[in-house]
Length: 360
Length: 226
Image 1: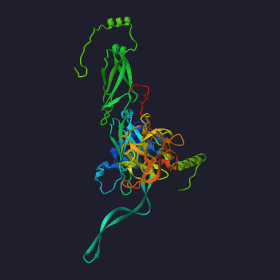
Image 2: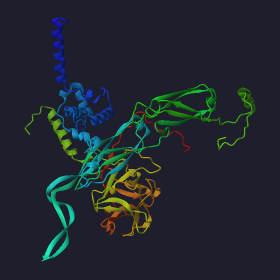
Image 3: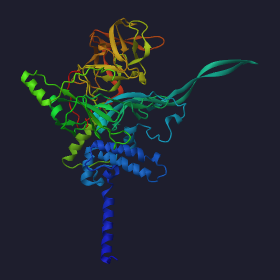
């Protein structure tokens, strides 16, 4: 049974903590799930992942979904801006000079497009009669370094947007058959162009920044869609913009699935007596290789866990497979050196003749 | 909006900042003011107000290759061209295009490159401009030089495209086709510069220069036997 003084102390402490927590505002780092030293890329990555999870359309049973989502938007808005982040780090949420300007919708759509939150149904479930602008499919070239570590590519999308204009315009024009009576029992059918009246629009070019994520382990031909960012349609909806990943060839590493292949040329001496070396990997870290036995040309070494992260589970990595080839000395040997080598290596003459091309 | 009191030094500073944002805010250069490698854009011929366009329709004369035209419509996904380096000079995604740089313009929907050669164009008998190649790879006649004023190709700027092999400039002089591409203008190449050969980058998707992830190195010193 704690002493009465202790209880009071506890209550005071709790009260003080609650007050300071309330006064200090929200912990944006915790909302995004990143450390205080997180890079801008980490922050974007965290936002993108959480935005998909926390969107209210996806959490219709959760009454707090709107608030959680709003918190996420506020956290990203502050931490992704260098100035605001500095102010927040020094003074907390209350220390921020102005209220939040950008609506969360703007932030969300820079990652996913205008109608990005179509989680439940696909676009096909929409009324098929609404005309739609064309989709734009764009090849995005990425380096193997980006596939290994991930990256965000910012692009500026400039496109025409329909804005209200004064007056009316004709829309949904179609041919219709009209029947007119010429006399008793005589009719004539004519084709007529019939249009509806719609509010007038004009197309104005506007632009905004989109954030395309190159996720770790991404594979060739994978697509990242931005809903509504394609070609506009004056009478209907815009099409989509899709980034199709094209992984570029790398001068050192070759990708096969999640595994990486590379080749190393060693000298004849190293092949015979052994060697130590380091290979610089795609993110700069060094892979240590050591041999103390004879290394034959064509020999392979497997380094588990040094391949690419798997796209579906980045904790699983492929392997790095190193194939060695041997460079022979350029200089010719004199008689004395030849004798020396014969006695040193103690290998008899072999001279086996066989068909090497059919695998015998 | 009520009056706001400003004290001492902060007042002129904030008015200067306000002035700057008013000047630079609405201009389209606010995010990215130059054209970069990997960008996919629509090119507008300034004099005739048509956009460079291609489609799966071949010329009925000349080379018989895929035709390149100018269209008046603003929304047409067949007017998108990808800015890429040549086969000899690699161009990194996001790097600004220099004035005088050699590039290829690849038609996004068909994968063919803007191309020219010594064939006569069908309507005006100037030099024919076509779309050639497969999946972005054609030949050396796909190379064009960007001619502009400063050091890089600014989005706001009117530029010219000079065909590297024939020295002719991409132009439109207003001749119109009939069926099946009614109303589309002829695009051809002409020897001398004029108002007809000025183009400007319009709608599109512009790649911003991006920070390379840690560890990216320059490998140009390695094997040269390939």
